[in-house]
Length: 225
Image (tube, rainbow, N blue to C red; front, side, top):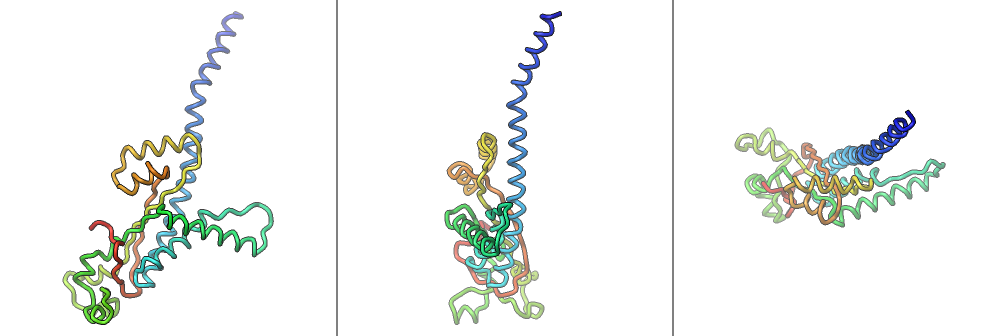
């Protein structure tokens, strides 16, 4: 009887040692995916802010980037549980905004213009504006009275963006597992660079909104279309 009890105790310890790494991996994975979900939610809002800013300022890349940094700032804002003065809060928000700007400047963010397309700018631009400024601009006023084939002008006044953000995975061990697993199946060159060279996880968001100002052609902003 005594030897049997000792054997059972040893078997339980062996089972625990086998199961423990798997359980830790699952727990760490769950924690990491919570952070990914938080980042994706914030990215969705930042993409909407970028699209809205672009719709108000001729779809310029600068306005889109400014809108994006405003929207993504909460991801980098950290407040302690201690009481903060208004000046402390403002300083932390400004610091987070600078981090967001650095993320864009360092190539961790890819902004692609899905609509209007380069073809739309080539076929629907206002010739009067082009003659005066040398810029291709899609008309935004009196659309119901302007004639275009198959309502192409109406469609061209929808601003659609795709933004890819390379987020840093902070949970140890599981971060490498996730990066290697996603790298094996991704085909996009920017996402591969994000995974392989930058050791970050790419998350993607889309947003679409009607233009409130005439869209102007942005060199190098178009997605492959």
